[in-house]
Amino acid sequence: MTNVAGLPLPAQAGTSLPSFYENALDSLELDDPVLLGLLNDELGRQRETLALVASCSPVSPAALLAEGSIFANVTAEGYPGRRFHAGCVNVDKVERLAVDRAKHAFRARYANVQPHSASTANQVVMNALLSPGDPILGMDLDAGGHLSHGAPVNVSGRVFVARGYGLAPDGLIDYDEVRAKALEHRPRLIIAGTTAYPRTIDWAAFRAIADEVGAYLLADITHIAGLVVAGLHPSPIEHAHVVTTCTHKQLYGPRGGLILLGESATTTLPDGRTLEQAMQGGLFPLMQGAPVVNSIAAKAYALGAVDTPRFADTMARVRSLAAALADQLMRRGVRVISEGTDNHIVVADVLSSFGITGVNAEKALEECDILVNKNRIVGDVHPANVASGVRFGSNSMAARGLDAEDVAEIAEVVVDVLTAAESASARVHTLDPQVRAHARKRIGAICGRRPLAGY
Ligand SMILES: *Cc1c(COP(=O)(O)O)cnc(C)c1O
Picture 1 (spheres, protein in one colour):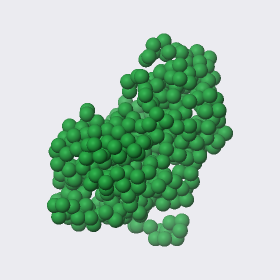
Picture 2 (cartoon, helix red, strand yellow):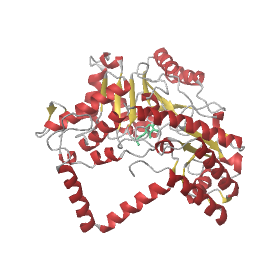
Picture 3 (tube, protein in one colour):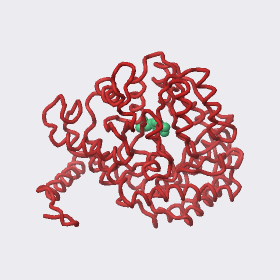
Protein backbone atom coordinates (compact mmCIF):
# COMPACT_ATOMS: atom_id res chain seq x y z
CA MET A 1 0.00 0.00 0.00
CA THR A 2 1.13 3.57 -0.70
CA ASN A 3 -0.13 6.96 0.40
CA VAL A 4 -1.11 9.84 -1.90
CA ALA A 5 2.55 10.78 -2.32
CA GLY A 6 3.40 7.23 -3.40
CA LEU A 7 5.30 6.45 -0.20
CA PRO A 8 4.85 3.02 1.38
CA LEU A 9 2.47 2.93 4.32
CA PRO A 10 3.16 0.96 7.50
CA ALA A 11 1.64 -2.52 7.15
CA GLN A 12 -1.28 -1.93 9.51
CA ALA A 13 -2.17 1.63 8.49
CA GLY A 14 -5.77 2.02 7.51
CA THR A 15 -6.80 -1.48 8.52
CA SER A 16 -6.97 -2.08 12.26
CA LEU A 17 -7.46 1.44 13.59
CA PRO A 18 -10.87 2.13 12.02
CA SER A 19 -12.29 -1.07 13.44
CA PHE A 20 -10.81 -0.19 16.84
CA TYR A 21 -12.59 3.16 16.85
CA GLU A 22 -15.82 1.70 15.42
CA ASN A 23 -15.86 -0.84 18.24
CA ALA A 24 -15.17 1.92 20.74
CA LEU A 25 -18.12 3.93 19.43
CA ASP A 26 -20.32 0.83 19.53
CA SER A 27 -19.37 0.24 23.18
CA LEU A 28 -20.14 3.82 24.05
CA GLU A 29 -23.56 3.57 22.38
CA LEU A 30 -24.35 0.33 24.18
CA ASP A 31 -22.79 0.89 27.58
CA ASP A 32 -23.21 4.58 28.22
CA PRO A 33 -25.90 6.34 26.20
CA VAL A 34 -25.93 9.13 28.81
CA LEU A 35 -22.33 10.07 28.13
CA LEU A 36 -22.81 9.59 24.40
CA GLY A 37 -25.73 12.01 24.56
CA LEU A 38 -23.59 14.63 26.28
CA LEU A 39 -20.86 14.22 23.66
CA ASN A 40 -23.41 14.72 20.90
CA ASP A 41 -24.87 17.77 22.62
CA GLU A 42 -21.41 19.27 22.95
CA LEU A 43 -20.61 18.67 19.29
CA GLY A 44 -23.80 20.49 18.38
CA ARG A 45 -22.98 23.36 20.73
CA GLN A 46 -19.48 23.76 19.29
CA ARG A 47 -20.79 23.72 15.74
CA GLU A 48 -23.47 26.30 16.41
CA THR A 49 -21.69 28.83 18.62
CA LEU A 50 -19.04 31.37 17.74
CA ALA A 51 -16.17 30.81 20.18
CA LEU A 52 -14.30 34.08 20.65
CA VAL A 53 -12.66 33.04 23.93
CA ALA A 54 -9.03 34.00 23.34
CA SER A 55 -7.55 31.14 25.36
CA CYS A 56 -8.78 28.30 23.21
CA SER A 57 -8.79 26.95 19.71
CA PRO A 58 -10.65 24.01 18.16
CA VAL A 59 -8.34 21.00 18.35
CA SER A 60 -7.68 19.28 15.03
CA PRO A 61 -9.80 16.10 14.87
CA ALA A 62 -6.68 14.05 14.10
CA ALA A 63 -4.98 15.40 17.24
CA LEU A 64 -8.09 14.45 19.23
CA LEU A 65 -7.91 10.95 17.80
CA ALA A 66 -4.24 10.65 18.81
CA GLU A 67 -5.11 11.97 22.28
CA GLY A 68 -7.85 9.35 22.59
CA SER A 69 -5.47 6.61 21.53
CA ILE A 70 -4.07 3.39 22.98
CA PHE A 71 -0.87 5.18 23.97
CA ALA A 72 -2.88 5.92 27.12
CA ASN A 73 -2.16 2.33 28.20
CA VAL A 74 1.58 2.77 28.53
CA THR A 75 3.39 3.81 31.71
CA ALA A 76 6.61 5.48 30.63
CA GLU A 77 8.36 7.22 33.51
CA GLY A 78 11.62 8.76 32.37
CA TYR A 79 12.73 9.83 28.92
CA PRO A 80 13.15 8.00 25.57
CA GLY A 81 15.85 5.33 25.87
CA ARG A 82 15.89 5.68 29.67
CA ARG A 83 12.48 4.51 30.85
CA PHE A 84 11.63 2.88 34.12
CA HIS A 85 9.18 0.46 32.47
CA ALA A 86 9.24 -2.01 29.60
CA GLY A 87 7.02 -1.72 26.54
CA CYS A 88 8.12 1.75 25.43
CA VAL A 89 9.44 0.96 21.95
CA ASN A 90 6.74 2.93 20.11
CA VAL A 91 6.28 5.44 22.90
CA ASP A 92 9.96 6.39 22.63
CA LYS A 93 9.48 7.03 18.91
CA VAL A 94 6.41 9.15 19.55
CA GLU A 95 8.12 11.27 22.19
CA ARG A 96 11.22 11.75 20.02
CA LEU A 97 8.97 12.77 17.12
CA ALA A 98 7.19 15.35 19.29
CA VAL A 99 10.51 16.69 20.63
CA ASP A 100 12.01 16.99 17.14
CA ARG A 101 8.93 18.77 15.83
CA ALA A 102 8.83 21.14 18.82
CA LYS A 103 12.50 22.01 18.31
CA HIS A 104 11.94 22.58 14.62
CA ALA A 105 8.80 24.70 15.12
CA PHE A 106 10.34 27.00 17.73
CA ARG A 107 13.94 26.84 16.45
CA ALA A 108 14.87 25.49 19.87
CA ARG A 109 17.92 23.50 20.95
CA TYR A 110 15.95 21.63 23.58
CA ALA A 111 12.29 20.75 24.04
CA ASN A 112 10.51 18.92 26.84
CA VAL A 113 7.08 17.70 25.71
CA GLN A 114 6.04 16.08 29.00
CA PRO A 115 4.48 18.95 31.02
CA HIS A 116 0.83 18.21 31.77
CA SER A 117 -0.03 21.91 31.31
CA ALA A 118 1.59 25.30 30.95
CA SER A 119 1.05 25.92 34.67
CA THR A 120 3.04 22.76 35.38
CA ALA A 121 5.71 23.84 32.89
CA ASN A 122 6.07 27.12 34.80
CA GLN A 123 6.29 25.25 38.10
CA VAL A 124 9.03 23.04 36.65
CA VAL A 125 11.06 26.07 35.58
CA MET A 126 10.69 27.86 38.92
CA ASN A 127 11.40 24.83 41.09
CA ALA A 128 14.32 23.70 38.93
CA LEU A 129 16.05 27.09 39.03
CA LEU A 130 15.08 28.58 42.39
CA SER A 131 14.89 27.72 46.07
CA PRO A 132 11.79 28.25 48.22
CA GLY A 133 11.67 31.85 49.43
CA ASP A 134 13.52 33.27 46.43
CA PRO A 135 12.06 36.50 45.03
CA ILE A 136 10.32 36.40 41.61
CA LEU A 137 8.75 39.17 39.51
CA GLY A 138 5.81 38.63 37.16
CA MET A 139 2.90 40.63 35.83
CA ASP A 140 0.11 41.18 38.39
CA LEU A 141 -2.85 38.86 37.96
CA ASP A 142 -5.12 41.91 37.76
CA ALA A 143 -3.08 43.35 34.90
CA GLY A 144 -3.26 40.13 32.89
CA GLY A 145 -0.49 38.03 34.38
CA HIS A 146 -1.19 34.34 34.93
CA LEU A 147 -1.92 32.57 38.23
CA SER A 148 1.25 30.54 37.84
CA HIS A 149 3.38 33.73 37.69
CA GLY A 150 3.27 34.26 41.46
CA ALA A 151 -0.38 34.96 42.31
CA PRO A 152 -0.97 34.75 46.08
CA VAL A 153 -3.66 32.07 45.58
CA ASN A 154 -1.26 29.89 43.53
CA VAL A 155 1.54 27.66 44.74
CA SER A 156 3.99 29.92 42.87
CA GLY A 157 3.01 32.77 45.19
CA ARG A 158 3.30 30.60 48.27
CA VAL A 159 6.66 28.98 47.64
CA PHE A 160 8.39 32.09 46.28
CA VAL A 161 8.26 35.72 47.37
CA ALA A 162 6.34 37.12 44.42
CA ARG A 163 6.18 40.76 43.35
CA GLY A 164 4.25 42.14 40.44
CA TYR A 165 4.38 44.82 37.77
CA GLY A 166 1.28 46.34 36.22
CA LEU A 167 0.35 48.12 33.01
CA ALA A 168 0.55 51.82 32.18
CA PRO A 169 -2.78 53.74 31.90
CA ASP A 170 -2.67 53.24 28.11
CA GLY A 171 -2.79 49.46 28.68
CA LEU A 172 0.82 48.87 27.61
CA ILE A 173 3.72 47.29 29.51
CA ASP A 174 5.82 50.08 31.02
CA TYR A 175 9.36 48.71 30.74
CA ASP A 176 10.67 51.51 32.99
CA GLU A 177 8.31 50.34 35.71
CA VAL A 178 9.39 46.72 35.22
CA ARG A 179 13.02 47.82 35.55
CA ALA A 180 12.29 49.93 38.64
CA LYS A 181 10.50 46.98 40.28
CA ALA A 182 13.35 44.65 39.35
CA LEU A 183 15.94 47.01 40.84
CA GLU A 184 13.83 47.39 43.98
CA HIS A 185 13.05 43.70 44.57
CA ARG A 186 16.09 42.00 42.99
CA PRO A 187 14.17 38.95 41.75
CA ARG A 188 16.02 35.75 40.83
CA LEU A 189 13.46 35.14 38.06
CA ILE A 190 11.47 37.55 35.91
CA ILE A 191 8.43 36.26 34.04
CA ALA A 192 7.31 37.87 30.79
CA GLY A 193 4.06 36.65 29.30
CA THR A 194 0.41 37.55 29.68
CA THR A 195 -3.14 36.38 29.18
CA ALA A 196 -4.89 39.48 27.88
CA TYR A 197 -2.24 41.64 26.24
CA PRO A 198 -3.08 42.75 22.71
CA ARG A 199 0.35 44.13 21.85
CA THR A 200 3.83 42.87 20.95
CA ILE A 201 6.11 41.95 23.86
CA ASP A 202 9.66 43.31 23.75
CA TRP A 203 11.71 40.29 24.80
CA ALA A 204 15.05 42.09 24.45
CA ALA A 205 13.89 44.80 26.87
CA PHE A 206 12.93 42.14 29.41
CA ARG A 207 16.27 40.38 28.97
CA ALA A 208 18.21 43.60 29.48
CA ILE A 209 16.35 44.14 32.76
CA ALA A 210 16.95 40.52 33.83
CA ASP A 211 20.67 40.84 33.07
CA GLU A 212 20.90 44.10 34.97
CA VAL A 213 19.64 42.47 38.18
CA GLY A 214 21.13 39.02 37.60
CA ALA A 215 17.77 37.26 37.16
CA TYR A 216 16.70 34.43 34.89
CA LEU A 217 14.12 35.39 32.28
CA LEU A 218 11.17 33.07 31.68
CA ALA A 219 9.09 33.87 28.58
CA ASP A 220 5.63 32.32 28.83
CA ILE A 221 4.25 32.45 25.27
CA THR A 222 1.16 30.37 26.00
CA HIS A 223 -1.21 32.80 24.29
CA ILE A 224 0.86 33.66 21.23
CA ALA A 225 2.70 30.40 20.48
CA GLY A 226 1.11 30.04 17.04
CA LEU A 227 2.01 33.58 16.00
CA VAL A 228 5.57 33.00 17.23
CA VAL A 229 5.86 29.78 15.19
CA ALA A 230 4.50 31.56 12.12
CA GLY A 231 6.93 34.47 12.56
CA LEU A 232 4.08 36.94 13.21
CA HIS A 233 5.25 37.78 16.73
CA PRO A 234 8.96 38.01 17.62
CA SER A 235 10.29 34.82 19.18
CA PRO A 236 11.79 34.94 22.67
CA ILE A 237 13.84 31.78 22.08
CA GLU A 238 17.19 33.60 21.94
CA HIS A 239 16.27 36.25 24.52
CA ALA A 240 14.81 34.26 27.41
CA HIS A 241 16.68 31.67 29.44
CA VAL A 242 13.59 29.46 29.27
CA VAL A 243 10.39 29.52 27.18
CA THR A 244 7.14 27.82 28.19
CA THR A 245 3.87 27.38 26.34
CA CYS A 246 0.78 25.25 26.26
CA THR A 247 -0.27 23.34 23.16
CA HIS A 248 -4.02 24.06 23.27
CA LYS A 249 -4.44 27.82 23.08
CA GLN A 250 -3.00 28.70 19.70
CA LEU A 251 -1.50 25.46 18.40
CA TYR A 252 -4.84 23.67 17.91
CA GLY A 253 -3.41 20.78 19.92
CA PRO A 254 -4.23 18.84 23.10
CA ARG A 255 -4.27 20.36 26.58
CA GLY A 256 -0.66 20.22 27.71
CA GLY A 257 2.59 22.15 28.01
CA LEU A 258 6.09 22.49 26.53
CA ILE A 259 9.42 23.74 27.88
CA LEU A 260 11.83 25.12 25.28
CA LEU A 261 15.43 26.33 25.37
CA GLY A 262 17.47 28.13 22.72
CA GLU A 263 21.25 28.52 22.82
CA SER A 264 20.86 28.77 26.59
CA ALA A 265 20.44 24.97 26.73
CA THR A 266 24.17 24.50 27.35
CA THR A 267 24.49 27.37 29.85
CA THR A 268 26.02 26.11 33.10
CA LEU A 269 24.21 26.96 36.32
CA PRO A 270 26.03 27.76 39.60
CA ASP A 271 25.50 24.15 40.75
CA GLY A 272 27.25 22.74 37.68
CA ARG A 273 24.16 21.49 35.81
CA THR A 274 23.39 22.78 32.35
CA LEU A 275 20.05 24.50 31.86
CA GLU A 276 18.97 21.51 29.77
CA GLN A 277 19.80 19.09 32.60
CA ALA A 278 17.96 21.31 35.06
CA MET A 279 14.81 21.19 32.91
CA GLN A 280 15.00 17.42 32.34
CA GLY A 281 15.36 16.73 36.06
CA GLY A 282 13.02 19.55 37.00
CA LEU A 283 10.17 17.87 35.17
CA PHE A 284 10.93 14.28 36.13
CA PRO A 285 11.45 13.39 38.94
CA LEU A 286 11.07 16.83 40.60
CA MET A 287 7.53 17.81 39.51
CA GLN A 288 5.91 14.96 37.57
CA GLY A 289 5.84 11.20 37.39
CA ALA A 290 4.85 9.35 34.23
CA PRO A 291 4.03 11.47 31.17
CA VAL A 292 0.63 11.33 29.45
CA VAL A 293 1.86 9.55 26.33
CA ASN A 294 -1.42 9.84 24.44
CA SER A 295 -1.24 13.59 24.98
CA ILE A 296 2.36 13.58 23.69
CA ALA A 297 1.11 11.78 20.57
CA ALA A 298 -1.44 14.53 20.03
CA LYS A 299 1.25 17.17 20.64
CA ALA A 300 3.34 15.46 17.94
CA TYR A 301 0.46 15.82 15.51
CA ALA A 302 -0.19 19.48 16.37
CA LEU A 303 3.53 20.34 16.21
CA GLY A 304 3.77 18.68 12.80
CA ALA A 305 0.75 20.58 11.53
CA VAL A 306 2.30 23.97 12.33
CA ASP A 307 4.93 23.31 9.67
CA THR A 308 2.44 23.66 6.81
CA PRO A 309 1.33 26.54 4.54
CA ARG A 310 -2.15 26.00 5.92
CA PHE A 311 -1.05 26.85 9.45
CA ALA A 312 0.82 29.93 8.21
CA ASP A 313 -2.41 31.01 6.47
CA THR A 314 -4.44 30.41 9.61
CA MET A 315 -2.07 32.53 11.70
CA ALA A 316 -2.10 35.35 9.14
CA ARG A 317 -5.89 35.21 9.37
CA VAL A 318 -5.75 35.17 13.20
CA ARG A 319 -3.96 38.48 13.07
CA SER A 320 -5.95 40.13 10.32
CA LEU A 321 -9.31 39.09 11.80
CA ALA A 322 -8.41 40.42 15.25
CA ALA A 323 -7.26 43.70 13.71
CA ALA A 324 -10.49 43.88 11.69
CA LEU A 325 -12.57 43.19 14.80
CA ALA A 326 -10.80 45.94 16.77
CA ASP A 327 -11.30 48.32 13.86
CA GLN A 328 -14.98 47.47 13.38
CA LEU A 329 -15.72 47.83 17.09
CA MET A 330 -13.93 51.21 17.29
CA ARG A 331 -15.82 52.46 14.22
CA ARG A 332 -19.01 51.74 16.13
CA GLY A 333 -17.80 53.80 19.06
CA VAL A 334 -16.50 51.01 21.28
CA ARG A 335 -13.48 51.80 23.47
CA VAL A 336 -10.82 49.21 22.59
CA ILE A 337 -7.85 48.98 24.97
CA SER A 338 -4.64 50.22 23.30
CA GLU A 339 -6.77 51.12 20.26
CA GLY A 340 -6.12 47.92 18.40
CA THR A 341 -4.13 44.73 18.49
CA ASP A 342 -0.94 43.13 17.19
CA ASN A 343 -2.04 39.58 17.97
CA HIS A 344 -5.27 37.57 18.36
CA ILE A 345 -6.63 39.50 21.36
CA VAL A 346 -9.02 42.45 21.45
CA VAL A 347 -10.02 43.86 24.83
CA ALA A 348 -13.05 46.16 24.90
CA ASP A 349 -14.11 48.45 27.73
CA VAL A 350 -17.83 47.60 27.83
CA LEU A 351 -18.54 49.62 30.96
CA SER A 352 -17.65 52.97 29.43
CA SER A 353 -18.88 51.97 25.95
CA PHE A 354 -22.27 50.46 26.88
CA GLY A 355 -22.78 51.09 30.59
CA ILE A 356 -22.79 47.37 31.41
CA THR A 357 -20.32 45.24 33.36
CA GLY A 358 -18.04 42.63 31.80
CA VAL A 359 -19.95 39.72 33.32
CA ASN A 360 -23.28 41.05 32.03
CA ALA A 361 -21.79 41.57 28.57
CA GLU A 362 -20.41 38.01 28.62
CA LYS A 363 -23.80 36.59 29.59
CA ALA A 364 -25.79 38.68 27.10
CA LEU A 365 -23.47 37.64 24.27
CA GLU A 366 -23.61 33.98 25.33
CA GLU A 367 -27.40 34.10 25.02
CA CYS A 368 -26.76 35.04 21.40
CA ASP A 369 -24.22 32.23 20.81
CA ILE A 370 -21.16 34.50 20.95
CA LEU A 371 -18.67 33.28 23.55
CA VAL A 372 -16.24 35.73 25.17
CA ASN A 373 -14.91 36.25 28.68
CA LYS A 374 -15.15 39.12 31.13
CA ASN A 375 -11.78 40.75 31.65
CA ARG A 376 -10.44 43.44 33.95
CA ILE A 377 -9.03 46.56 32.33
CA VAL A 378 -6.47 49.07 33.60
CA GLY A 379 -7.90 50.97 36.57
CA ASP A 380 -10.89 48.63 36.78
CA VAL A 381 -13.36 49.47 39.57
CA HIS A 382 -14.83 45.94 39.58
CA PRO A 383 -13.36 42.65 40.85
CA ALA A 384 -12.31 39.97 38.35
CA ASN A 385 -15.62 38.08 38.54
CA VAL A 386 -17.50 41.23 37.45
CA ALA A 387 -14.90 43.28 35.49
CA SER A 388 -15.47 46.23 33.17
CA GLY A 389 -14.16 44.70 29.97
CA VAL A 390 -14.47 41.67 27.75
CA ARG A 391 -11.73 39.85 25.85
CA PHE A 392 -12.22 38.60 22.30
CA GLY A 393 -9.87 36.21 20.47
CA SER A 394 -9.66 35.23 16.83
CA ASN A 395 -8.21 31.67 16.92
CA SER A 396 -11.53 29.93 16.26
CA MET A 397 -12.70 32.50 13.71
CA ALA A 398 -9.50 31.83 11.75
CA ALA A 399 -10.02 28.06 11.98
CA ARG A 400 -13.51 28.52 10.57
CA GLY A 401 -12.08 30.50 7.68
CA LEU A 402 -14.01 33.69 8.43
CA ASP A 403 -13.20 36.80 6.41
CA ALA A 404 -13.31 40.56 7.03
CA GLU A 405 -16.96 40.80 5.96
CA ASP A 406 -17.98 38.14 8.48
CA VAL A 407 -16.09 40.06 11.15
CA ALA A 408 -17.89 43.30 10.25
CA GLU A 409 -21.20 41.49 10.71
CA ILE A 410 -20.06 39.99 14.03
CA ALA A 411 -19.03 43.44 15.30
CA GLU A 412 -22.43 44.77 14.29
CA VAL A 413 -24.21 41.97 16.17
CA VAL A 414 -21.98 42.45 19.24
CA VAL A 415 -22.73 46.17 19.32
CA ASP A 416 -26.49 45.60 18.79
CA VAL A 417 -26.62 43.10 21.65
CA LEU A 418 -24.51 45.15 24.07
CA THR A 419 -26.49 48.30 23.26
CA ALA A 420 -29.76 46.49 24.00
CA ALA A 421 -28.49 44.70 27.13
CA GLU A 422 -29.27 46.49 30.39
CA SER A 423 -27.56 45.93 33.74
CA ALA A 424 -30.21 45.33 36.41
CA SER A 425 -27.25 45.04 38.81
CA ALA A 426 -23.50 44.36 38.45
CA ARG A 427 -24.22 40.68 37.78
CA VAL A 428 -27.79 40.64 36.47
CA HIS A 429 -28.76 41.79 33.01
CA THR A 430 -31.81 41.86 30.76
CA LEU A 431 -31.91 41.51 27.00
CA ASP A 432 -34.81 42.23 24.67
CA PRO A 433 -36.01 38.83 23.29
CA GLN A 434 -36.34 40.22 19.77
CA VAL A 435 -32.77 41.50 19.74
CA ARG A 436 -31.65 38.10 21.05
CA ALA A 437 -33.55 36.15 18.42
CA HIS A 438 -32.25 38.34 15.59
CA ALA A 439 -28.65 38.09 16.82
CA ARG A 440 -28.85 34.30 17.20
CA LYS A 441 -30.16 33.97 13.69
CA ARG A 442 -27.28 36.00 12.25
CA ILE A 443 -24.62 34.14 14.26
CA GLY A 444 -26.23 30.80 13.37
CA ALA A 445 -26.01 31.71 9.70
CA ILE A 446 -22.31 32.58 9.98
CA CYS A 447 -21.54 29.32 11.82
CA GLY A 448 -23.55 27.44 9.20
CA ARG A 449 -21.71 28.85 6.21
CA ARG A 450 -18.29 28.67 7.93
CA PRO A 451 -18.20 25.23 9.58
CA LEU A 452 -15.28 24.08 11.69
CA ALA A 453 -13.22 21.80 9.45
CA GLY A 454 -13.73 18.16 10.41
CA TYR A 455 -16.47 18.91 12.94
C1 LIG B 1 -3.45 29.86 30.11
C2 LIG B 1 -2.10 30.29 30.56
C3 LIG B 1 -1.30 29.43 31.31
C4 LIG B 1 -1.80 28.11 31.86
O1 LIG B 1 -2.02 27.16 30.93
P1 LIG B 1 -2.64 25.76 31.38
O2 LIG B 1 -2.11 24.82 30.35
O3 LIG B 1 -4.11 25.96 31.37
O4 LIG B 1 -2.14 25.45 32.74
C5 LIG B 1 -0.01 29.84 31.64
N1 LIG B 1 0.44 31.03 31.25
C6 LIG B 1 -0.30 31.90 30.54
C7 LIG B 1 0.28 33.22 30.14
C8 LIG B 1 -1.61 31.56 30.17
O5 LIG B 1 -2.35 32.42 29.48
